Length: 180
Length: 76
Image 1 (tube, each protein chain N blue to C red):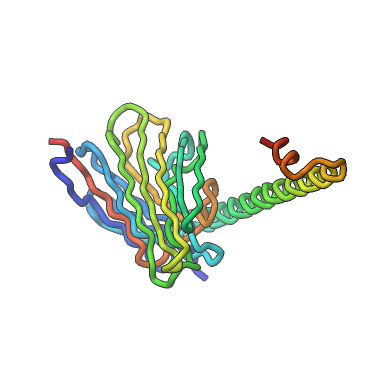
Image 2 (cartoon, each protein chain N blue to C red; image 1 turned 135 degrees about the horizontal axis):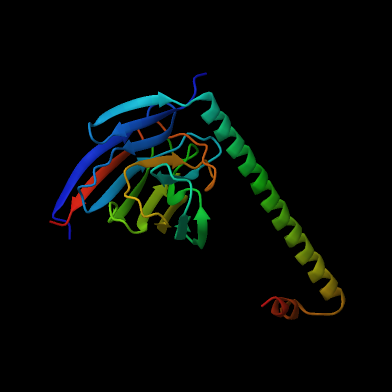
């Protein structure tokens, strides 16, 4: 159970921001928690996704995920040795104006010398009535380095080649959690 | 039109800076997007061809006298 829960830093997108990057993350916490309020600007997407990279690494991400959307649809899947870490759904440009998706990403033992993993919970409502998506994802990053930087990328519909931009005022909050 | 930017927050100082992507980074993003679109089109074409082949096979089976239930049972 967390004994301390401290906001380390906040990153807020400007008018045309391709990534939100946290660098020089201190290794003094037990776990990290990212909270994201996000929307993308890409005109072909009502629901978009976002991805991450640790330490600018482009290798070793594997995932399982489960999603439900639009009332009666469910889908799930898995991927191995991917080049980005999957997070999940946020609002795209075609969603209701000025609405943002929400996500939480919990990264335990981020400074340890073993492989890292995280779980992501994401949800977004896209037209205020019937179009929405929620998903959970569990991701392993097959790398033993301490996590010192995190970059967040809007997918523009692609889980392997993100080319999107964050909508202005999309915001990521990075918290440090200590167990003592 | 200016290139997109990345917002970089240095957690040791709390200072946030907005850095414009280089032309090379923009070109890489565009190349990645093009490659993804091509892959996606290929996947969709394969799925369409598979669905068409299935429909064609079902029509031929029906012409041989199989009922809809019998045809459905073959794919289970």
